[in-house]
Length: 394
Image (cartoon, rainbow, N blue to C red; front, side, top):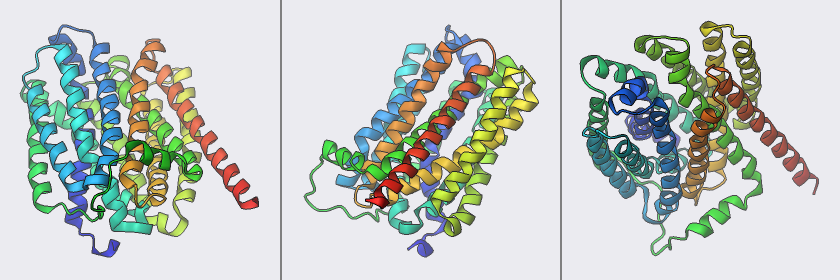
């Protein structure tokens, strides 16, 4: 079926998923200014990112089984509508507490829209799901690539509230395109009951999928450690301006795009497990270099050069782990996506508090946390290999 998938549909699916990185990354350059104008410290503004991730994870938990029960198209439309309304409400936010609450609502609504996309890809690409995921991820990566630059440009000509106005306008356009063009290729059985716990029991009972689920979770934890810490590390610690911050951030997103491009080219030949293994080797090396660079305080250049390949490796790991999970649950793709998303963004929400707890005023804590995430992935993959060998011997 993958031969019939148009570029336009891939672009629409990527545009739906892109509301999340846009909502996360566009306001990163504005964090110091937001803290000043809202009369709070930057730590609370950084917590708005953790709150967004936590609410997004809870939303995935709720809406994943709902997608399997009622279909993906109606859920996407409702999610995009309320995401647009929450984004518009943020334009008028003048209080830090309202900011946190509206960000939680924005994330919860956004999860309803984005949870449907992997299931649609699974239905369209079937055994080539990893390739389809790479295509959509590669297109979607344009969002975090340009998001900080958009945020910086908005700050240049307007106010930080205008960033959320741009988000509201973008999601409104995507809502109209989704209403007009989004299909629902996953058949929903008439009269099918919505059974949240039964669906989750089914997914977690699949022993072979567990190492990949944990792998996806720890890859996301490492990624969100970087995402949460990067405004402080680049702007506060190394003293770069907002424009250079956008360029450095774009470099890392470009590495993610390159990883997904390579994956789309080679995963059909080597398979998702071998591509994941390649990413893990690169991740172990680059995370080690990152820790050493910040331990010895070698400066911005060494930090940037070690983060770039680490971002690429995390992209390879997460994309292939997610694809292998979805391929095992053709009838429960929404629930499987919810499991992935909840654990992914739930673990991401832990990044902020852990970074605050480990704060030393240097770039070392986030480096160590990212390295710990990669080590956890390594353990998960070794457990998966042991489990596979034990199953073959029985």
